[in-house]
Amino acid sequence: MSLNHSPETHSKLIARIPLVTGRDLPEWFSTIENGPSFTRCEERSTWLAEEHNLSHGYAAALVREHERARRERHY
Image (cartoon, rainbow, N blue to C red; front, top):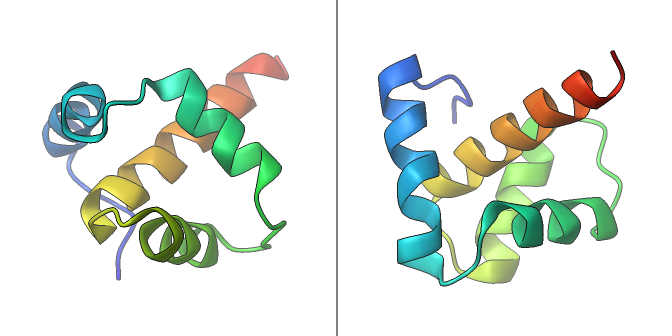
């Protein structure tokens, strides 16, 4: 499974997450931060998909967006 969607696809997935899941991004980011500490993003997205019944596309987009936001917080 690839975590690299095109920027356009990634933006569309992120925009739809609240509608599709009923949870906004900060809630999902908290879920990721409070979940198991995986080394690889792929492991994190697989856990998120399986644990929270998300498609792998949405899970991968959430993990990628979480990583982007986390990097921005450290600058």
